[in-house]
Image (tube, rainbow, N blue to C red; front, side, top):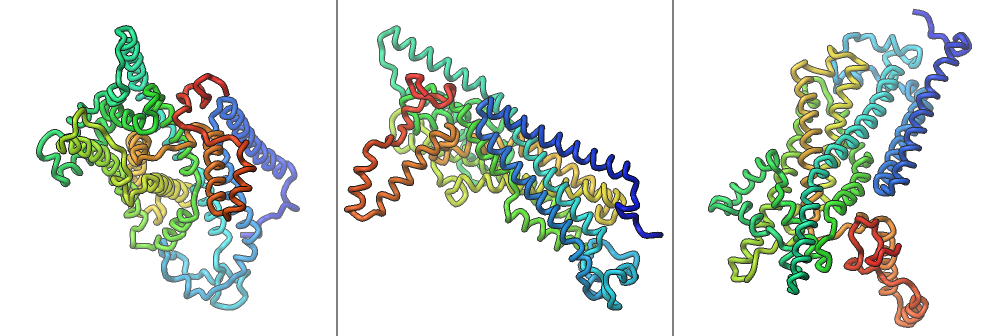
Length: 477
């Protein structure tokens, strides 16, 4: 085979046609992202717009990796190592033992071969892009399917608002005072009885088994939603029983989503670790496919069990002699290490691991073919693909909506769901207060005088329902 032709010996119409195709596709993708960003800003979807900016950062990182590989390929292929060092830890057995002769033009010393061939560099280049692309597509699919499931809860929220309005109107018509706790703690007794009925539910093993199974059937029932909503509103907005909890959840989830889109440094380390252990005969690719589905089922069971624990705590409060209806008390103690945010990190890892599995499958399919040894057995390859689809559906339609509602039972409030203005205002006030606390007494006095005219921290109880975009009770912006 002769040497490959350079640009100097390539027809100009070929070069121009290829450049036109590449530039056209790149500009079309850039314009699509640009108009998508304008659309999100026009609809005041600030959190999704931030997620889009994060996506652009990831694409820029992938572009930089590609650029670095292109610049350094000449240097990498001239790094020579002994041929004996390339005979172990192989994904596939070598069919051509005369690799030294193929690398003779790069390595002049006999018995030495390039550290990485040009073909291997090209395949690595493609693999990184496929991985990033599949991860972004999977994340977008997850948030779209999860959001579609959560939007089905909207009619529950509408029904709650309608019932609250009817109760308050009836109380006013009859000139009676309806206690807000009666309005807020609606149907909590039904929720507690459903989640704690039966002697066996008091056993930890039984409650865990039921929690594991419930995530596949009616994972968030109407009574679950109403009870958890009332608990959240009673803690944070006792003066506003008509608070739009559903829209607050959607916006908080959108804010969390921009953290899931990115590929963190520890996820890149996971990729490197997998590439290191992808050794022929170990079947690493096959066994690794079970890791995300195992974690996903554990996370789903944990979230369901947290709901059950909240109901058990509410029932226990009545058995202690407390009067009235059972009341749910959100607490971080039910979460792993008392950190609700840890669940999001696990979901992030599960999504990335699943996209890595699917991306690796399509990369091998395109670059090596279905009969490649890297695919291993056909039964293994097909099973991995099926597991990947199952993970995507379960994570999107079950686990993500569960996370959206249960994570609010940690007792905290997510200011980001009210918009960047409220979040920045509270954060700025908290930073100023912390700085003032560290000052000396005389400096603190001067600082207090200088800040007397500043805006006080926002009172979250006075923030109106999310429906008006975060304006005050009087409708002023």
